[in-house]
Structure formats: structure tokens, C-alpha cells
Image (cartoon, rainbow, N blue to C red; front, side):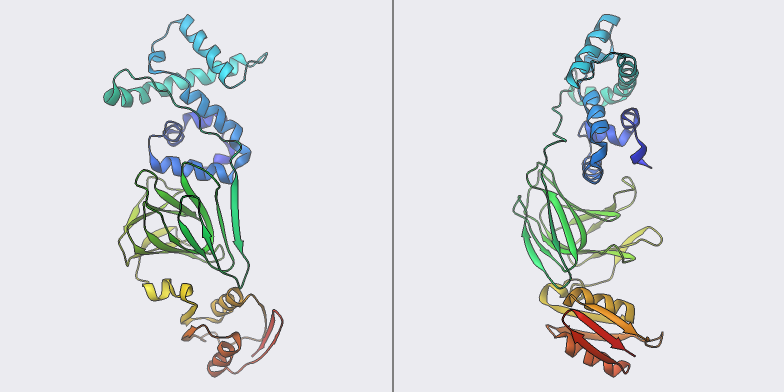
Length: 340
């Protein structure tokens, strides 16, 4: 679905957006909160749609013409649309809201009788977004406003609200999360095509944009992993020691057999190569040591390396590679030249 092309009326007609505006489902709230952060240019249409959806009452569903005009005028005033020539479009939106409200009202009436639907619009403006980035060769620890701690790997980027009721962060790259427990506010990490939600737990996510795979590994607690672009699709619930793997090639999310040693090694300064090809090795070394590697020639296509390197220097790793395929190398500042 191309939400970029949505108008106010399109948002009003979208069932998932309705659930978000009325705070009915955590999944929809998390999805649209994330979408809005990524698409701030649509804030006006989103605000208008939310205002319309949250400014009526169940009693409005059965109205006479006078009541309709009164509510219409009230909504106009609430969103500042009292302008010459704008009444007709707003009446169209309002009629649509009435149609939507008929289905929503039944949900509320079953549980709450004749209660009014009265929600205050959450601020779409004035929210301060903080961003933390690590270049190649650098790791850091980030403390979030809710008390959660994030260990951010090299060449990774984290984005989150400075102050907010919803615990939502956005990750590009790799990070280990130690989530402060809060049963009333789930903690959700959006990383590429998937989201990972927890209450209080610790887990690792590896989601570099150039990689075909997004990997999640749970160290403690419990998390739910899902494709946030398929909000009602398959979800995976992980127990400690389990992992999930999303394949960008075929859009499949599945359980993974990758264990703690491989998933969490980077936190302890360890590089693990497991039948790794040269392209993967080159990328890992560039990211880990903050260098750019120029390659002259190439190893045989069948070249693979297995090895574990604990806090090793770049020179020692390159010397180890020389045993698998003869090479020459030179290092100058952050430039490395490898010749096969």
C-alpha cells in the first residue's frame, strides 16, 4: 500500500489508521507512529484525519440536520478549517466519518454502553527526535529516556523521541538492547522491514541496509517479531536463546538457528567468520576497524574462511588471511590495499 499518496479521506477510510487514531490496537499504533516519523511531510493530513475521527461522539451517529450542522461547525473550529469554500469538502469528510463511526460504535457500545468517544489528539508537532550514529570503527552505549540501555555497533544509527509516551526506536545497523521493564508501555524497535516488541528484556538486532538478512536474537525475556508492513501477517514469539531471520530476498520471516556465540560476539570484541566469502570479510573488516579496503585481484570464488578473532589487530587478521590465499597488503592511516 502506497501511503505516500494518501489524502485525508484515504486515511479516514483505512481500518488500520482508524484503529491507530482511536488507540484500539498496539500493532496499528506502533506502525503508524513509525510511519509518521519516517514521513513528517504527511503530518497535516494525518492530523486532520485524527481530528475528524476523535472529535465526534457515539450520540452523533443518530442526528437530525441541526445536530449535524452543529457538529460540523464544531469540527471546523477544532481543526481551523473555517474558510470560504471549504465547507463542502469537510461535509464529505464528515459524512465519511459518520459511516466509519457506525462500525466503530458497536465495539464501544458492547463494552462501554453509551460512553462518549473522547480522546485528546496526541501532538504531531514539537516532538524532538534524537539521533545517535556511529561511524565505522566505533561502538557506543546510549541511554534512552525510559531507562533502557542500547549498545550500538559500528556503522549503525539509532533514532528515538527525546520525551514520549510510546517507547519506539528506529535502528539501522546493529545494536544490543537492554529494555527497562514497563508492562503498560511495550518497547518496539523498527529495523528495516520488521519490528521487534518487548516489555522488559534483552535482545540483539542486526539490520544493515546492504545485507539480505535482518537477524534478531533473544538473550532474556520474551519478544514478538513481525513484518510491520504486513501488520496482520505471521508473528514469531521468541523465547531466550531463540532467533528470527528475515530474508529480504523472498520477504520471509522464520525462526533462526543462530546461537548466542555468533549473535552476541561483537559485544565482547570478537569477530567470527563462519564459511565467510571475501566480500563479507571485507565488509566486516571495514566496519570493525574503520578503514576503506582497496582490492587488486580477487581470491578464488570458492574461497571461504572460518575463524574467531578476539580483540585482534587488523594486521593479525590480514596475516591469517594470507594462510588461506596468498596476498600482499599495506595499511596507511585508514586506507588498506590488498593484492592477490
